[in-house]
Amino acid sequence: MNDSITSSLPKELLASLASYGMVSANLPEAMPKEKTIIVVGVQRGGTSMVAQLLHQLGVPLGDAPAPTYEDLEYTALLRAYDAACRRPLRGWLKRRRIEKDMLAIARKRDQQYPVWGWKFPDVLCPPLYRQLRNPFIISVHRDPVSICARLQRSEKLDFFTALPNILSIQGRIHRFLIRTDIPCLMLSYEKALLNPEQCVKHVAAFLGIDLPDSQIEQMAEAIRPSPKQYLRDTRQARIIGNLDSVEQGFAVGWAADTKNPEAALPIRIIVDNTQTIEGTADQPRDDVRDHLSSRNIDAPDNHFGFRIPLPAELQDGELHHVFIEIPGHKDFQIDSSDTERMFTHPKETA
Image (cartoon, rainbow, N blue to C red; front, side, top):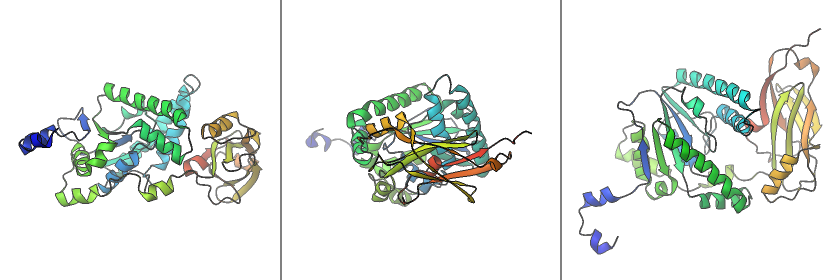
């Protein structure tokens, strides 16, 4: 709008014309005191920015520290849920089990906090949302070109490989928001950066929180693009991998050295922080080679998997904790949810 025109308009009218890119829907007539807050969006799309703001507002989001603020229990379960969703028929029963496990965690959190939540990008779980105590959803929306450019820099992903995947996830989120009757706040990441104080006001108002102006200004300082600590903590690790499962007496997963993909990495399995079992990631895994290729990493073969037998004495019907390490690699920066599992082996029958 031309400056000569806007200067003649009343300030109240100009304020009404301003678009802050923040829209709420399905708000309840009376704000409940108890709430469960779910932050959704896509990876590198601004969910950590909102999680940091919620943390400053005093909302418990789990045990992961800044800058990601993720609930490690929910992170592990949502990743498994996402994998099960990719197998519509065979994954149905597993999805139901995971939904039950997540609901059990929610009930435990309900007893601990009147208001709590979690943040995890890319994955939606509507069947769970319907069973939560007063769910409130904050959805963050960022320009997909910016997201893919960021993934190209930080994850070494091909831009045109990442773009359709990001658009697909965004479309899934949009369709959910159109259909749901759950209270929702939709935020534009770019508009939040341009109007940080308005972002703080909208989030606080959505949750029924009154803030003094001084606190709004202070919290607005945290809304900034990709702080250095976030970039350091989410940078691409040299060693990547996953502990897929612990079942039938074996620890199963994969590991790869992104700078030396032809190397068969040593694997160390630690059980209950006392027992140590050694092995090697040298089993065929075509899916891992495809994943490396999507990150522009040329792998000469597909030997990245491991299937390491666990001691027979663990088949005692008790709950055990298993963790994987890569000996000699201190930059093994995989999230604990990727490298840890709790498992129970049934007792051996005579």
